[in-house]
Length: 82
Length: 210
Ligand SMILES: [Zn+2]
Image (cartoon, chains in turn yellow, red):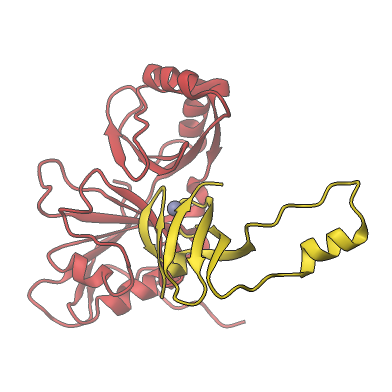
């Protein structure tokens, strides 16, 4: 069980949150080709270490947060608003 | 289709009476009614909203706080549930009247949505109240942390819950916890309350408008 400190609500248990994926990606523009969209939609780094992620505090303030989490140790580096 | 359980009304609690163990300190469970409106700050209108709310006599407490106001709007409790987002609660009156009053007072400074018809409210009080709620609530409800001016949204028994304190005036040492859940979860949430209070015993009070 992770304990995530929401910048609005304070420390809350993981069950109040939904994981929403990699927050380091940015959507390709209209000028980009299909390969760029393929990469954006499907290809992930899956690092063993610090990862920037979207978490939605659906059971609390209902805001989307950006969270730094170590995928190997589960240490949370910090959370903030996007 | 299976028949609904006997005695479970809109609030989901059984008829008034005793439930569970015959302890000396049964927890008090009660369904109650509230008119509710969700107030959301319109982008860039923070100053206008502050003025409009002051004119209306509506308190807009900070995130995670609850505030009560008197006279101008009747007894209204406002909960700060997210940045720029509040839930205002009032005793039931003519349908729609509370929301209309808030909406006309705040004008374009906020979006005002009536949500009272979709909420079921329960109160849990008595000496064992914290012990009973702790069976499903992950927040610290100790009076030093969850005071009479605290509000929170959380998840209890997989049900989204808005939580605040509805203490009698001058009785801050005997907290009355108020919990609002979506109406469609009222029965499930009542089952959680009954299960959680089976060990201490519960006194079920008649549903109330207060
Ligand atoms: Zn939050």
